[in-house]
Image (cartoon, rainbow over all chains, first blue to last red; front, side):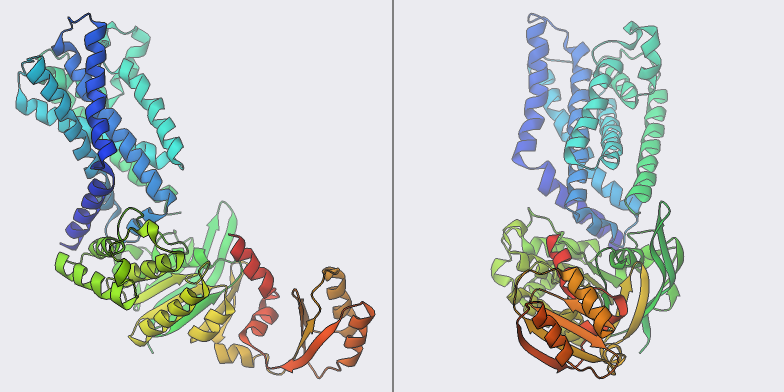
Length: 244
Length: 322
């Protein structure tokens, strides 16, 4: 019960202090909107919404969660307020779960904008809403955990931002967001398969158009495995680096 | 008095460097235990090992008689910690910060709200309770950080340099608060470089230097240990002179046990009765004008200087630079 209270206050504090601040909300609206507009203009008003829709959702979540979590944790580390959390009588696992929960929710909320635009303006038809919701949850979890991995490696806020971009931009091209994996040079394909977002994008394709290239169960299983690995790798690193 | 915290042969090494070696101490329930030492002496490292912010290389830690070496986490609900920097959340108000900290220790909503209000009042911060933490003065920030550490009524409070870098009025207020908390039953582990803090607040004091605990006793015990010594305090004209040369000459020519020179003060510790006239003549011959020279009672500062060989003025300057 006490741990649950601690979990709740950390989550509420993060939501209020970081994720629900007006600049972040507006960023969450502008980012997917700008990408959709860019795709729309680039395609001379004739793009296939079902092709770009999964990519935009995945990118919105990926960029939102990784930047926010990496920056907020690094910021709290620098101001030493994170120490306050480390000496609280809650397990490190629960503390990290509380910290990432805010970012996961932020990622999920951000995905609402592209869904609304695609659905209401472009009249996109979604094949499986339940699968879409589950896919968004999984992509948010995996992206947040990538942000956590970055946060644990960075000492300064600017380092966190640099590391985030170092991971995110190659990911755009490698995980099938806009270029299908099978169209990539053979030498690059193994890289695509070690990126968790690849499987998230494939699940999104499955739920939006049914046009996936891997079995959905396999993608889910791999995303769970990636999440577990990233979570425990971060916990291991926090114990090693921050509890010196 | 039973023992609240006990450290047995604590050791901490970082990449081959030994930061703390063989530190053993006992903090008794209800006392204020002072930990005094220069920068890099191992004070914060020792605290970090005791509170679970640093892994213990060797040794044991007991809380309330229970061995918590392998699981300090389990003792963290008994502990309140005030770090050497005020580390609350800038964007939250003072009151919100306290409520948040209460929540971290599992206090329910109504309890943490009433406790936060009570503490804001106790610490004289009621009027600024809705102001953001970043708008607080340094003294207020320090007070709120202490309040945040005691919101869950810990059995032991670790205070790391609580009065560093704040104005005199806040220093006095914080000293009073520490005394009050102790009177109300809190056990306090205090690290400081202000001898005055230790002298005025602590029941027992330990001197730490180069990672080793050198001496531990009550304040009076520590002072008594050098009571046979003569301490001569000489007030001189404030001007620049070759400090090292003067120090060495005094030590060599007058065979004193210790000699410390600050801006306008020379303090000499000797083991026996000391004739001051040759020293006055020596100083005059070096164009140093003497305003006053007197035999004084040893203080905790003298005990510290004698035991550690540290210069208090340099110790303060070193800290203030941080």
